[in-house]
Length: 252
Ligand SMILES: C[S@@+](CC[C@H](N)C(=O)[O-])C[C@H]1O[C@@H](n2cnc3c(N)ncnc32)[C@H](O)[C@@H]1O
Image (cartoon, rainbow, N blue to C red; front, side):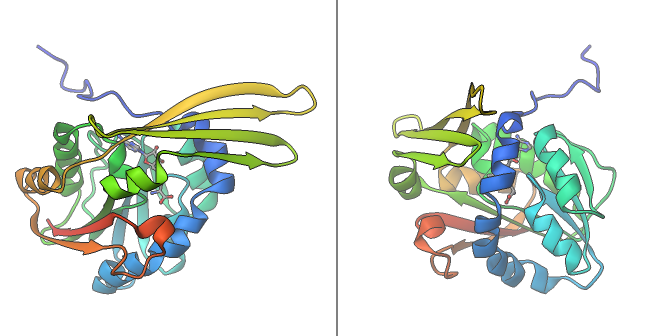
């Protein structure tokens, strides 16, 4: 008999080697573009002081703002290193390292959200369903859940390219590749850091392009109701983030 406490999934720790870079160079830019959408579609439905679960909270960029707005915030993320930053950035929140497909905070929230395409990191439809089930278990009846996913046009536009970050103390090369046939997107990162010795490290972060029909089927299988889809472009997000990004609003 399997031990009931044995996790059904292997925790996604891919962001551990990315965490310091993410905290320094990413996160806040997306937040400033997406926060108005989260406020309009989700937070406007809540009362001050109600509880919100930040799913795949990363370095706590959104949690920080919500705490400042008076909400009670908890966050989960698969990366202990991202959670380490979240605890520093968003003082007053409760942060737990856990995989979105298999977590238990023994609390039910008034709302949940999961943004910056975090669920594109789930590699398959089964995983999406597990994630939706886990989130729904943490919501009060009829509570809203908002998340975003990017689609093929954004992968074709943004994930077949290279970038570099050059700072005094580091150089970071980013090579992104989207394989249309499998829907797999790969981001290979090389960092040179710690001058004057300049040490090199390499890591990879992967995403998956989910079909909208699979997403809706997984939501229904997990018991979520009334899916309403919003195009980020219609919500006035800039092209850099909004080319093919869909916000899904559902009810527990
Ligand atoms: C692009 S970041 C977004 C972070 C945050 N939501 C934000 O807006 O800044 C994606 C986050 O999803 C987390 N993540 C990816 N797969 C996960 C999983 N299976 N379970 C929990 N967290 C996961 C990563 O660790 C990372 O922190």
